[in-house]
Length: 300
Image (cartoon, rainbow, N blue to C red; front, side, top):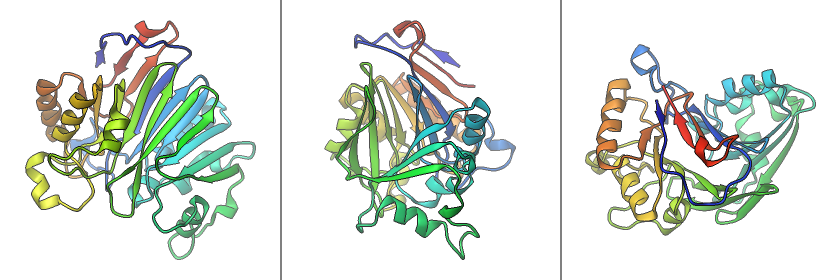
């Protein structure tokens, strides 16, 4: 699938490419009925002028890690939206962690109990849950803890704005700004009907691409209230209110098969033409080698 949205009027520079490595939530998918949209859990890569930003470390981060080593890259900035299992289960198996000479920065800001990012990782990677600890890593790993709402500056020319999300145990959404283009990663958040979250609207505002938690449909929310997730209809309401160009339906419920997701995508497109359901392997170029005319999305 290739779609060319209207060019943005914003000033542009360099490259800004996005790849989906995992789009499922809660559990990986399984079986042939889920292959079109992919079975891996949450992981999105943004490559900006040679810098690699990775959001979440679900099972999708494992094939990403293999690709990084094959490419010969040596630097990664990893950001956790939060540390529920579906978002970190791939972290101990991320191949660059075991390659000397790799530099990996791991950042988190969702914690509500005062623990640091390094403490969270150490608590996860220990017996009896795993037979290894972070001490086994050969890479140079730098852990950073930030406060939700804080702006981050991982590299010159890249700004990441953050906001607290409504999710059990806390979660953080990210807005990546570079060269006049904006991509937001807003997953694992529960909306309040008729009360748009101002922090979430700020992440969406005039964005070129937003990955949004669309685990449910509006009709399912009554029985799912309190789980910490949202709907594709709410994503459209937010995108319209905030002037978002493209809405990526993300964090697919592990129970949905390809037919379910294709039907949801079609209905969403009828209402908001800029909607698309995330698929493993889907790529976006916000700024290509020739500038804004390279703006496109490639999927299946």
